[in-house]
Length: 374
Image 1: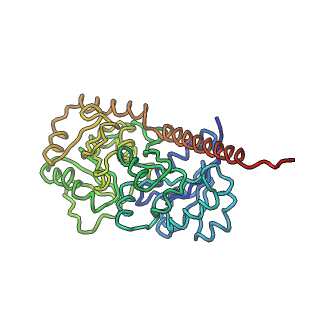
Image 2: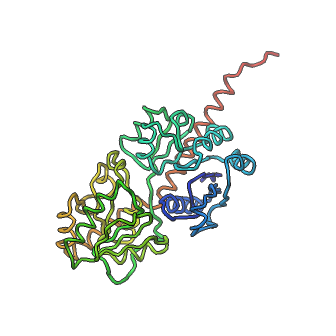
Image 3: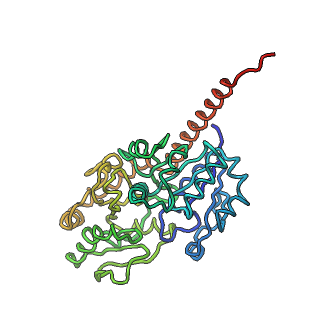
């Protein structure tokens, strides 16, 4: 197995506060390091994350904070230049400038890792180039997308990406596994506030809580507005450290998965919560979107609710045997296809393909050079 030098420029790996990027990077990079690859992570030093760092020094990646794009060039140019693959993530501050710089320093060895693909594409369609521009996409040698399905072809045809590959989120079974705890909640939800997720959270958790006074519910997540009307039988926690996620899932009979509106429209956008809950042996009730059946089989590995009434019926009428069978089937599927190691192996394969193509192009260029006659 070839061992690669991989550099990631991402939103955050040091702080999981208010973002799902950190847990995604942690799981993926940990497994890449376990397979012998040398990992460097470069993170913009932002005040919000500086005040909430829960993993300042990941043991599997050399992690450095930088204050500006200029500091990147001054201090880390050689690290990026010598990498086999340089991955720039979505929502990186000054992402367009950072992407241009990476492409200049490591030509033909850069990838864009979109952890927010449908949101990114909606931004581009609206002319919003917060962290990616249409002109930048064809210059990335590879586009790694959290969303699969038809979106992959759209990125290639509409924006000219030379290589688009799915790289879904995942969970690490070393951190997420079944654990015995007293069942405290009939349904729980783990997720930061999002204005476009809130209507579905209302429909599938808050309204069921209002109608089922004997039921017990929990929501864990930051940034919820002060005017959210939490029913008396809903326990809200502002933030859970990733090390507490396993216990939180174990305390639920069911966990709720709610998807952002742009991701529902695009389909094929599984949330990390699907994989975390499945790994922990907690059955999932999810909203509906195209492509979900390719991740978990509805009715056998996951339940789909479209209304308050359906969510209530599933919680109240699913027998314990049925509930445990759902949990077991989902965990088996997770272990077969959706662990962080599966994603690491995929990225490893994509990197090898990219480097092989680069080598072949170099050989063709050399052979095409005119020979000097003696």
